[in-house]
Amino acid sequence: MSDNKRVGQVKEVTSLSNPIVKDVKALALKKFRDQQNAFMAEGLKLVIDALDLGWTIKTLIFAKTQLGNQTVESVAARAKAAGALVLEVSEKVLGAITRRDNPQMVVGVFEQKWLPLKDVRPAQGEVWIALDRVRDPGNLGTIIRTADAVGAKGVILVGETTDPFSLETVRATMGSVFAIPVVKASPEAFMSWRRGLKAKIVGTHLKGSVDYRTVDYSKDATILLMGNEQQGLPDDLAAACDTLIRIPQAGRADSLNLAVATGVALYEIRRHALPDVGR
Ligand code: SAM
Image (cartoon, rainbow, N blue to C red; front, side, top):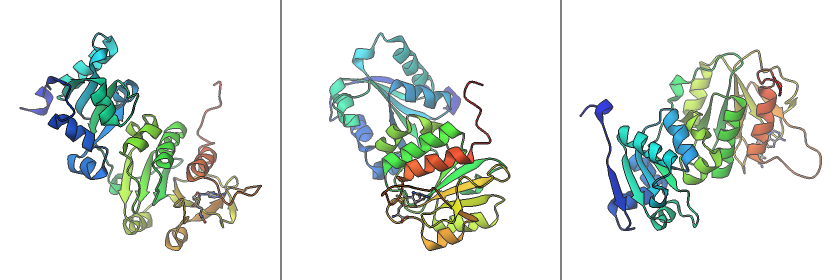
C-alpha cells in the first residue's frame, strides 16, 4: 500500500505483557530507541505540535478514560489516518510506559529525525548552537527550548552526548524538540565542516578574553559553541573558534550552569533580531 493510503488500526490493551506495550516501554532505553528509530512524547499538546509540524507518528496511546474527550478523539483519528497504531489503554499501562505515577493521558511514539551536518548552512544574522559532549538531559532539553524561544536555527551535538530523544530531554524541551532540528557530529566532522563555513564560531570559555556583550552578532552567521558541563571546551575545539567570549561573574560561583550560560549568550546574540515586547 502506498504511504498516503496508509490507515492505522485501533486496539484496546490492558495487559502489561502485551508485546506492543513492551516495545513502547522499551523506548525508555536508548538502545531500543535507536533500534526502532523512535521516541516517546507525552501529553496532548506535544502530540498535536508534532503532528502539526509533520512528524511521523507510529503509535498513539491514550487512556480509555479519555473516550468521549473530543480533542483526544480527534487526535486519535488524525493519528489513525496518518497510519499509526492507536492503543486505548488502562492508566496502569500508561503509568508503566512513562514510568510515572500520574501519567499524561496521551503518549505519541514518533520517528526520530536528524538533520545531516552537510545540510546546515547558516545565513547572516542566524545562530546555531553547538554543544560539546553535553551530558545532562535537563540541560539539553532546556537549551533546545531556549533555542526555539530566541529563534535559533538548530542544535549540533558534538561528540558523545546525551540523547535528544530520551524521555527526560523531550520533557524538558516542552515540545521544542519538534521545532528545532538536531544534528550529530564527531569532533572531527565538526572541525572539517567548520573549515568550509561562512560563519563565525563563537566559543564560550571561562578564560575567554572577550566580553560577550561587545561582539556585533548581526554581521555574520554565528555558531555558538558551548563546553561540556564538567570539563568545558577541549583545547582543539577552543582553538577552532574565531572568538572566545566570557560572561562576567561576580560572587563565588566558578561558572554558570551550561543551559543558563547558553541562554544568557543566546539572548545577546539574538538581541538584534528579537522584537521589542509590546510591538
Ligand atoms: N569546569 C568547567 C570549565 O572549566 O570550563 C565548567 C564548565 S561550565 C559548567 C559549562 C559550559 O558553560 C562552559 O564550558 C562554557 O561553555 C559555559 N559557561 C559557563 N559559565 C560561563 C561564563 N561565565 N562565561 C562563558 N561561558 C560559560
